[in-house]
Image (cartoon, rainbow, N blue to C red; front, side, top):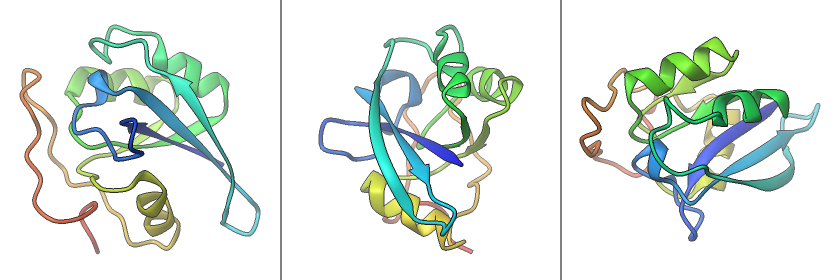
Length: 127
């Protein structure tokens, strides 16, 4: 399994999917642990109009842990076979570990008209 996360230079989950510096792609081992992390450059701009979904899908990504993300980008990712978990924030590696532990769920809210997504708390919505 591979998980992608839109990140800043400081490995923080970017609060806006389409404006991130890059995507961290986490390869998950059979033991449900992070086996490898690589960086994929972001095309910059609107996530729903870029080809990032097909790039990530062709690399085997099936999960996107995102902060703020619009409905158009979610549709493009879903159509490429990538499930989107919204409302994430904090250190990308720690959030992936929380997801692997079953402690992350989708916040249910999307960015509207590319407005900044406001989050309270440390990482994603917890069970």
